[in-house]
Amino acid sequence: MNKIIVANWKMNPSTSKEAENLFRVVFKKEKSLKKNQIIICPPFPFLFLFPKKKNKNILLGAQNVSAEAEGSFTGEVSPKMLLDTKVSHVIVGHGESRKGGDTDEIINKKLLNLLKFKISPIFCIGERERDKEGSYLSFIENQIKEGLRGVSKSDMKRFIIAYEPIWAIGKSAVREATPEEFVEVKIFIRKVISDIFDSKTALSLPILYGGSINSSNANNFLEQGADGLLVGRDSVSPSKFDAILNAIK
Ligand code: PGA
Image 1 (tube, rainbow, N blue to C red):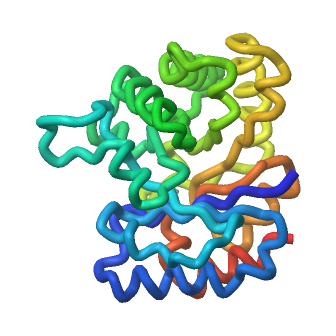
Image 2: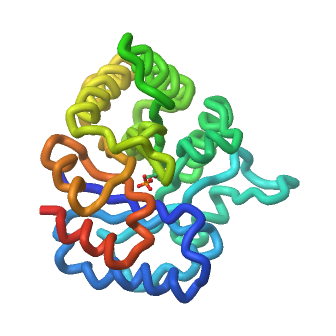
């Protein structure tokens, strides 16, 4: 299966000049990407800077979307506006957005809102902490079930799921997950999706790993079964992201 690499720039970089440079770094790799896909997710103001040059392996994503379609919602960005910037994917349910107030109910509304406009969700799930009894699995199951409420089987074709344990992401990460820990959850996610829809839907769903990915661990996750990676910090350093792309075999 071809791999999907999501570059989540978060609230970086600070200037449009740096953003243009980061786009350039990825486009320079165009030929070596083979069939792997990169989805670059910059902050809203930089979406329009995405190079016009067409490339079906380098796509544009956003980091969030409103749960509403249009109207008096100060500070919000609608799916229709995103379509105008050529966005094909949107991250929903990221741990940092959940911390900022996105509940499972809001996340569900956002997912349904995107699907109305045929935009593909990158649906993030992941527990805050691990316990030996395995209750993190029921936490994840609940996130999936609540998030996908009302989503049809045919809409599932648009989905990418990113497993991002909160304890492994960002500057306060305790450590990265091990590929084995990821694989356990990946199988569990497939089981939950299979119970909601069917096994065909579950098996065709790309499941990515995100959390402290760098050039030394990237290939490990891919070789052991991740359908792709969601890269945060190291996607906004031109040299580090370049190294991650080089590490992917
Ligand atoms: P990180 O972030 O790679 O900086 O840990 C991943 C994410 O939060 O999306």
